[in-house]
Length: 334
Image (cartoon, rainbow, N blue to C red; front, side, top):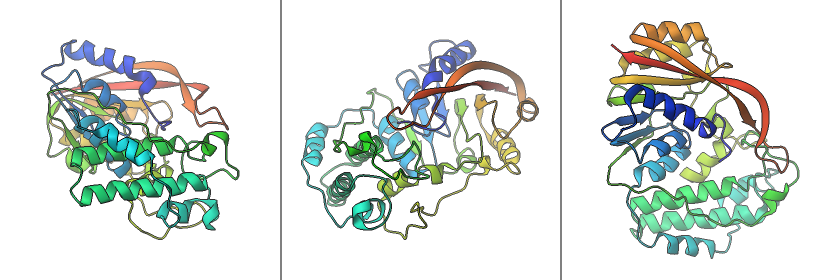
């Protein structure tokens, strides 16, 4: 997914930094990805560690991580279910088509009419299978993840769901085909949560706590509201031109409260190492971060300059923007 703040391009930097702290053998490590997003970092460490604890309070993120992190053994017949979903005809009375497609009269055009109808048909079928007991919880989240990622690729937006484009771009005209959300297999059980990070931190513990909170005032609940709508698929009254839903507002997106929330999180954590990803455009300053972390143990910082990917422009979903600097703030808690 083309996701704000994705750490995909920075994974080697993150992995090298962690190896310098604890060595290359991570088989006994409990690794926590507390602001997981699409789960890129947790997925990278899942095959190497004893356990991944993954959390994000956005429900679409929970769905993705429940599949990519929570599912760790093969699921029988999963590809047959994918084929069955792809064979469905679209429905004309579903929530996505009625509220987020132009042909319904909603005025919104997040998806083509055909894809909106198909998303509804697939989402309804997945829920029917699950509530009737035909599919397991593991298969349910695998199928939901596959739908969310496949639908996102065809969204008629410039990247996020804060607005839709007036005319359908070429990628949005393509027919929806569900691609399986492939997860890695191993023998270890993992934990996946959908909670406020500052609340959950009081109940978990481990070796490495990786923190990648929002950097700025843009709320993920509004930027990705339609993914939550597909994931939850519960009726509500969409608001305004963009069809926004009610969403949770993170204290990490507020200049006045971010530092207090961060301090509380570090204070309440029961992990030997804390690693904070934060770039040079964030709400918290470098001196403020250093001051907070230094209160709780031995602190140091490493950085890497890199090209950031920005929102697409018509067909180019990923094109290079200006350089930015990513800082990894490292605390060995005392």
